Length: 218
Image 1 (cartoon, one colour):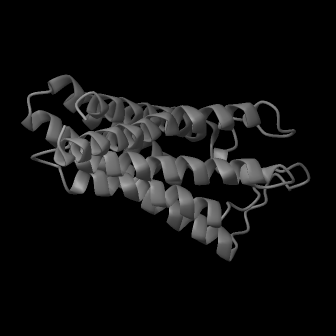
Image 2 (cartoon, rainbow, N blue to C red):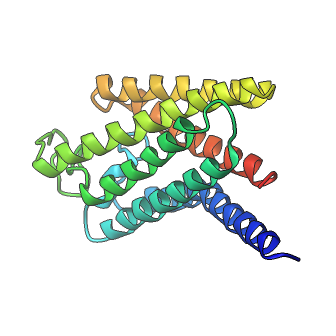
Image 3 (cartoon, rainbow, N blue to C red):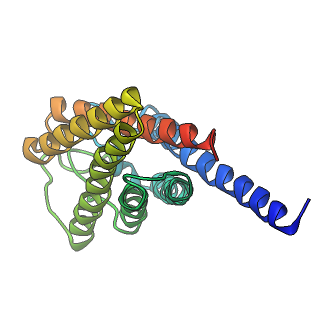
C-alpha cells in the first residue's frame, strides 16, 4: 500500500466519522430534550418550546444539548462537504453548518423564561432581554440554514436522479419553514408549539438520513 493509499483510506475513515457525528446529532438532541420535557417540573411540551429548558437549575443540561448537537451538526456538514459532488456541493454543507452554528449561539444566548416556566414565572411573562433577542437571532440563523440546506440538497438529489431523497429534502424544508413561520406569528399557541416540535423532529430525521446516505459512499 502506497502513502497515497494510506492517506485516502485515513480520509475516508475520518469522513465517515464526521458523517456519523452528523447522524447521531438529532437522536441525541431529541432524546435529551424529551427526557427533560417529561421530568422537569412545570414544563409542558405542548406549551413550552425546548429552548425554555435552558432556564432554571438544571438548565445547563439543555445548554450542553445545544452545544453537543451543534458541534455534531457542524461535523456532519464537513462530512457532507467531502462527499457531495456536483450541484449543491458548496452551499448545501455550508447551510447545514449554519444550522450547527445557530445551535451553538442558542447555547450562548438562552431563551428568556416565559409562559410560566420555570416554575414561578408568571404565565403572561413576556419580557425580552438582550440575551433573549440573541436567542431569536440564533434561531433565525440556525433555522434559516436548515430550511435552505434542505432545499439546496433537494436540488442535489434531483440532479443525480435520487427522487425519493429529493422529495424528502424539499418537503422537510417546506414544512419546517411553515412551522417556524407559524411559531413566529402564533405567539406560542399550543398548535404552533406542537407543529414546531414535530418539525424539529422531522428536521433532525432528515439530517440523520442524509448523513447516513452519504456515509455509505464515503
